[in-house]
Image (cartoon, rainbow, N blue to C red; front, side):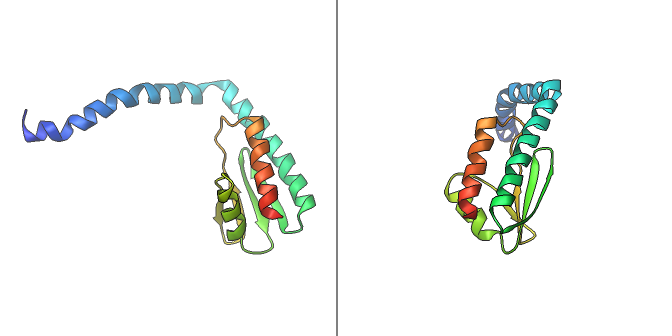
Length: 124
């Protein structure tokens, strides 16, 4: 084995492990049920976020498309983002006043409900 062979060895061994994962990912994304699931979960998320907006005056607007959503706040989003992270929910603060949520396409209704509950606490 030459030194150049040794340098490429990790690529070959990683490829064997990565290929089944790649194939499963492609199969999952090609499943027509995934799009319908994402649409349903997006509607569920939007309805919960609208309820949060009615409850918390800090929320100026709710914007969503599918499972991507953003809450426009009346002030900086950093405190809400930090509070969410401390309770196990990863969200982004964008444009200083926006809390962005981008859950995975395979998220469950129970997981969305838990995320909204954490967000509700963070906004209080």
